[in-house]
Length: 109
Ligand code: 2BA
Image (tube, rainbow, N blue to C red; front, side):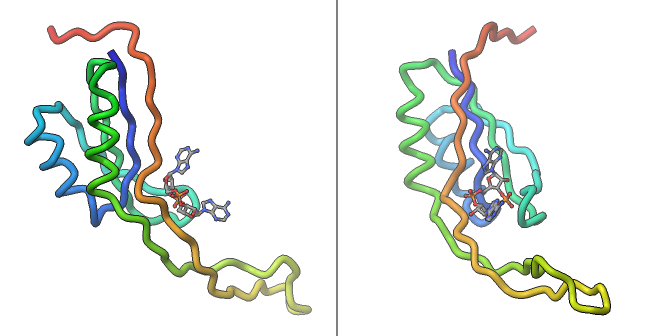
């Protein structure tokens, strides 16, 4: 048994959950926040037999796109008045960030 933890963009989450459900995978959806952009994203946890992990990864790949987003960063050195000046930067957010974890026990009580 494996646990697939997939952090995906909110824009892709609904159709990804639908596709996983259509393929009979159990999935739990969590509303999460990225540490860098401090914007909402979605984390899915999917428990699955290890021989089905590749199927889960293929469904994630089919349903998640990478996108660029603009954000702001502060300059490294402050102006004489002590203020940091924000400037725009573009970041590429991956289609999904995925961890595959061994499950020691799986029980439904
Ligand atoms: P965020 O932390 O909001 O990061 C969004 C995107 O910003 C990242 O996309 C990356 O392109 C960029 N980024 C992140 N940290 C950066 C930094 N220190 N300097 C410059 N750019 C930076 P992804 O790498 O595709 O990550 C998408 C989301 O997946 C992340 O949202 C975070 O929620 C999660 N994530 C990524 N790597 C992770 C990890 N090692 N552990 C846990 N969560 C992770």
